[in-house]
Image (cartoon, rainbow, N blue to C red; front, top):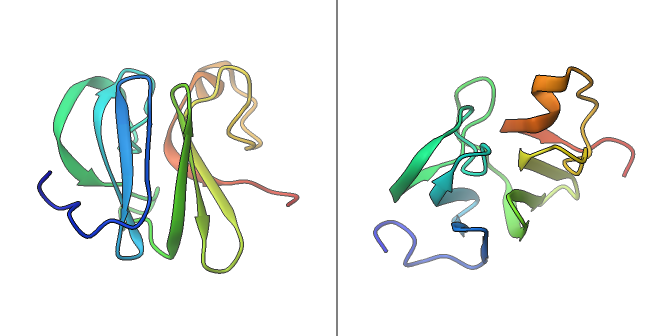
Length: 114
C-alpha cells in the first residue's frame, strides 16, 4: 500500500484501516462515519492519506493506533489518547454534546481525564 510500507502499527475495523507512518497516522477505506480522520464523512477512499488536526496540520507524535467498529484511537509519545470516527455512543471520549457532533467525530480529539 502506497505510503504505509514503513508502518509500525496497523488497525482495521468496519471496512477502514489506519497505520502509523513515522509519528503520523494514515487511513484509507470507508469513511461514512468520519473514521478516516479527514473532518468529514464520504464514501470509500482507496488511497491512504494523513489524518489531520482541526488546525489543518498532520496528527503527529503517534506511536500506536487501534480500532473498534468505526472508531479509531491513537496513543501519543507523551501518553495521551486521541480518537476520531463514530461517536454515536460517545466512545471517542470527547466532551462533544451537540447531537451532530456525537455521531461523527471526523477530526481527531484528545480524550480528557486519562
